[in-house]
Length: 261
Length: 169
Image (cartoon, rainbow over all chains, first blue to last red; front, side, top):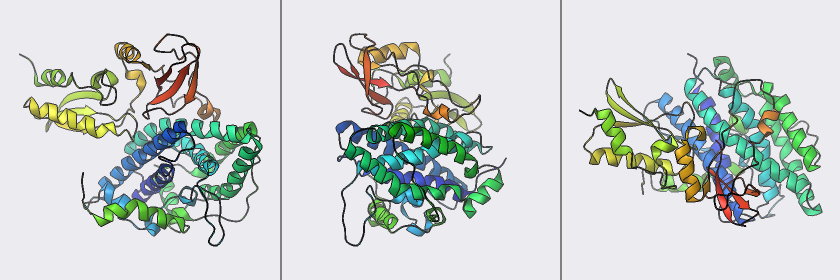
C-alpha cells in the first residue's frame, strides 16, 4: 500500500495550522459577533485538521516525534506552507507603515484557499493511503462550509457598497499573485505524486478557476492579471511574516516545554 | 450472564455530549463501537469536527466511567468512515428539537458519482429548517457558524426567536 511521504503531510498540516493561527487573530475582534464566532470556528477546524495530520506524520516518523514537537519546535524555514496563508490580515505595506486588520483580506484569502482545499481533500479522499484518506474525508466536510462562508462574504462585499467593493477588489489584487504557488509542484509534492498517494495540484487548476470565476462574477469583482512571481513558501522560503506568526504561536511552548494545564 | 461488552455499553449509556447534554454519545454516533481484540477490549470513539474542543472531555469521560466501573478497556479514536450527522437516530433528533436546537437534515453525501466543481458550491437543502420553538419553516440563516462548530445560527421570521441549527455534516 502506498503511503504519502511525511513531508507532504507536513505541507498540508502547516498550511492548516498557519491559516488557523491567522484566522484566530480575529477572536474577540470580529467586525460583528457572528463573524467573530465564525472565524473562531473556521480556525478550530483548521487547527483540528493540522493536529490529525501532525499526529499521523509523528507516528510515521517515530523516534519520539509528537504533534506538539512538529507544531511548536520547528523553525520558520522548516515550515512547508504556502506564502498566501502566512500573510497578515491586511494588504501590503511600505517602510514603517502600520495597518489595521482588514476583514476583506481575511475573507478573500479564506476563499482562495478553501476553493483549493475542497478540490485537494476531495481528491485525497480517494488516496490509497487510507490514513490520509480518512483525514481528507473529514476535512472535506469542513472545507465546504469554509468555502460557502467565504464565498458568501466575497459576494456581499463585492456586490455591496462602493467601499466594500473597493476593499474586496484591493484584497483580491493583493493576494491573487500568491495563488500562483499552488500550481508549481515543489520537490516534496513531486515525491508525493510519485508515491501515488497524493494529488497532482495541476490537475485541479481548471476546477479552481471555475469556482473563482463563478464567485467573482456574482461579486462583480475582476480577476487580477498575475505574471512572473511565484512564491516559494512551501519550499521553506517564506515572507518575513511567518517568523512573527510562529514567534507568537510557539512562544509559550518554548518558554515552558512540556507545560500542561 | 452479561458479557463485558454489554456491560461496557450499559456503563457508557448515560454519558452525554458536554455541549449538548440532552443527547448521549451513543445517540450522536460519537461512541461508535465496543469490540474484542487480541489485546483486550477496545472502546471506539470518533471525532465530530476535527477541531471539536469537546473531544478531549469526551475521551476523559469515557475513561473515567470505565475506571469507575472497574472495567479494563482501551479507548481508541477512529476517523474512518468520517462521522456524519446521518448517524443520529430519530430519537436523538427529537431530543435536540425539544432542547431548542433544530435537528440536522440528511446530508447530500460526498464522493461517488460524477465530480463537478459546482458540487462544492451547492448548498445542502437550506430551506425548510423548522423553528424548534414554534415549528414555523419561515426561517432565515443568520450565520453558517453558531455557538459551536457543529451548529449554524438561524432566526425564526414568525416568532422572531433566534435558534441553533445542527448542521448536516
